[in-house]
Image 1 (cartoon, rainbow, N blue to C red):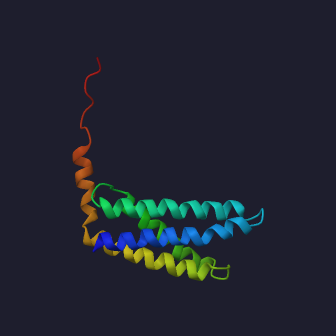
Image 2: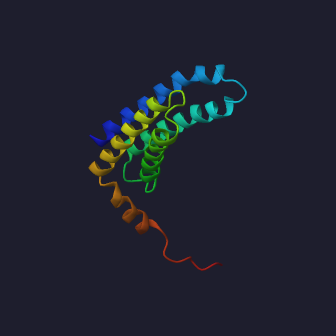
Image 3: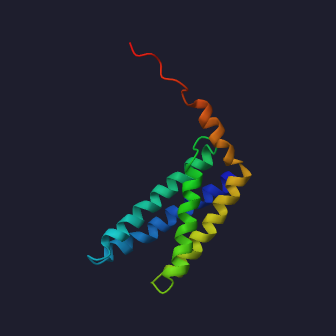
Amino acid sequence: MASGLLLLAALGAVYAFGTSITAVRTAGPEAVVAESWRLFGLLVFAGIFLLLAVRPRLYPGIWELAIFHKAVTATYLFAFASDAPDATGTAIADGVLAVVIIVAYLLVRADRNWEGFRDRQPTEEKSVR
């Protein structure tokens, strides 16, 4: 179920990427950097969601960063930028996405990822020759 939710999130990010291409093409000089950043960030998130869907226990920290990004973006847009164009829609989408990621996180018990990560870390440097 968690993988399905994350695959859906990845598809949503790819869809948002596709619909954002026009925004970059039509952006004025004052907005082209921000629109480009957003455009390629959508692809990065699609990749992150895909990696988490395929190997949910391999990436400690990535879950938490994705949750943080989506939750803080939604909170900020609702609290401080709700009058900006597209802010409410983006805030709702990111808020829903934060909840979806949290549900997937809980379903796969991703909090345990850190245990495996710590176990894989070398405890002591090997002697240098």
